[in-house]
Image 1 (cartoon, rainbow, N blue to C red):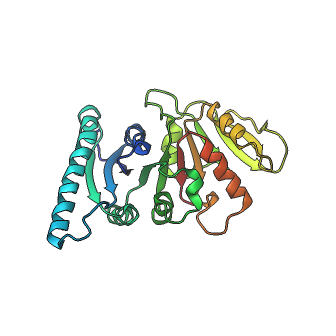
Image 2 (cartoon, rainbow, N blue to C red):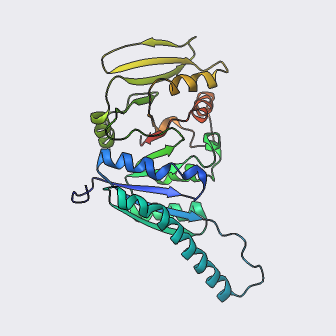
Length: 266
């Protein structure tokens, strides 16, 4: 793998908390499928600086904190570098996470950004979250990791789609080649009950009624349907102040599933 020229640059974001513990392992498995190289970027906000310190002392303190953070990131990443045949680099920074990530994305122009579910999917409509920032400033694919594990390259990949089947993006075409069995398409409408329709050799479509408070049941249905990756177009997510009821309902459903969510550009 290291001898091949990577097709995709994968940026993995971490804030050194438990919520980001799934990001790098999942990114590695994905990199194996799409022939990607990984850039791990860790950010921690500035906290606890002495209020009456001189500028020199503050700068010295920030430098020491970054060295500690870089060492922590090195410990986390080096074990994967030694055991996985994937090109990897890493860097840590002390600063405002939203600003630091926005600057790093602008500088490196990744094809895919991987981040943990730091604030929960219910925080989608808060404009200052890191997830909102990534979805707005990043023009490529975004992967939101959850607790559900991504299958290894040797195992079958189960793909699910929200709203519409995504097959035109080059990365999705690669994933489809590695996926086995029938794909799932989850549609949300005002029709009653859950039903199967348009059952072909490659796709099964499910319809969910969005007027009822059955969000937990819908999420469990997705969880139990052998779906390892939920794929959705960015246009279906609430990235603006004006939210339709359908988008609010969709976020409620997504917030309850532990399946990773991959967001594709429009």
